[in-house]
Length: 105
Image (cartoon, rainbow, N blue to C red; front, side, top):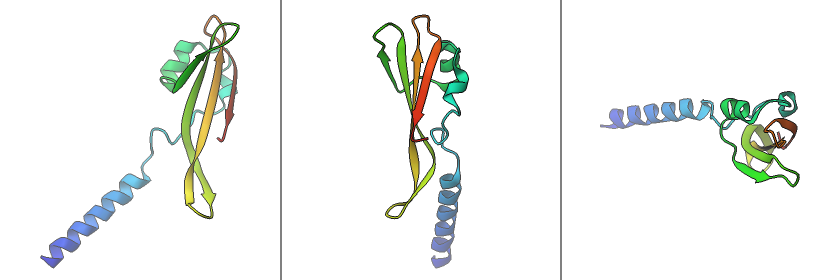
């Protein structure tokens, strides 16, 4: 019985180690938002997925926001923690990306 419990613990810890080290779909932010200026909303949807937030722009068009976890930031209190990345994409009236920005990436 004791050997069975030990084996179960080893398997459980091994599973946690493997799944904990796996890549999260939200762990990687798209790189260099400025490099995609001129792309259409359809292209961004196909390659980046649905935005986390959308707002209308004053002179037409939309601003899309993406929030991702990237890399890891070191903190004395929490150790290694994921960094929050906020990506802003500004589309014109025709749905073409004309400006972008990011913070925390």
